[in-house]
Amino acid sequence: IPAQEMIYLAKEAEAVRYLADPAPDLANYPMISAEVGLTAPTAYELAQLWVNMSDLWRGIAAQIETWRLGAIAQIETAADVATVDAIVAAALATLEG
Image 1 (cartoon, one colour):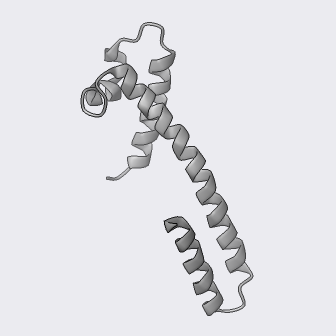
Image 2 (spheres, rainbow, N blue to C red):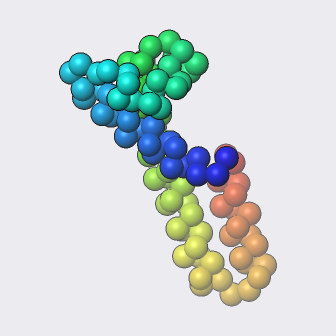
Image 3 (cartoon, rainbow, N blue to C red):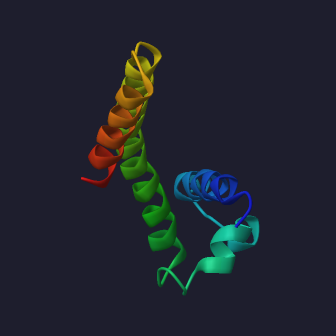
């Protein structure tokens, strides 16, 4: 859906606030309130899940950025279209790996 990335960032931010709150009131956490019971049975477990997923994604995103930027650097110095095609194919194979 449009803006899904923003939703995930908002979920992470809300989860961090929830977990830091010594006495959280679900009325102050609309995204958690909307999803609790669907993805996780409790607000605490849902918030923990969102924070953990965000942390895992950062590690994966760092690897993807390394591969992506490496491919771009190779493409910038490629001698011809066939070389560019080979670089793109190798990068995609790495991501699918």
